[in-house]
Amino acid sequence: MLQLRSVLQIADNSGAKEVYLVGIPGQGNKHYAYLGDVISAIVKKADPYGHVKKGELVYGLIVRTRKETKRKDGSYIRFDDNACVILQAKLSQEPKGTRFFGPLAREIKERGYKKIASLASEIY
Image 1 (tube, rainbow, N blue to C red):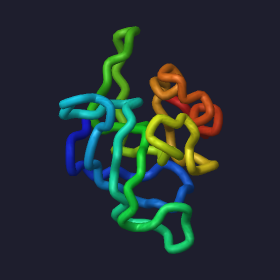
Image 2 (image 1 turned 180 degrees about the vertical axis):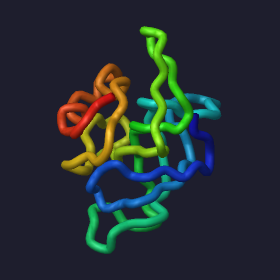
Image 3 (image 1 turned 30 degrees about the vertical axis):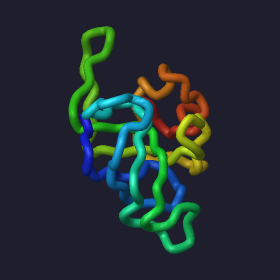
Image 4 (image 1 turned 120 degrees about the vertical axis):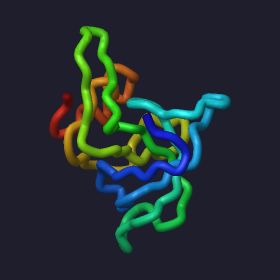
């Protein structure tokens, strides 16, 4: 459960290290973003030679949250940090990065982001 001004880590090799959530596009007046939601964010920290630069507006997919999420089988999933993956465009399902670090939630694959799920090292 992330809201405006939440700081997220980046779980790919796109060049960004930390982003600042500024909106949830296409969701109307929605106040919170959950696992599998697309967000718009500003890059706060970045590698000097990465694909994205500091201050750039990017779109990301939330892949990990500290707040637990209930699954259909009754279990809960929770991670140690809030993290997202940078996307090519707002409605695109293509990631900018080619490698993903750390575990990703199974809800990502269920939402249709199969390319991200297939490149992930581990899925929980």
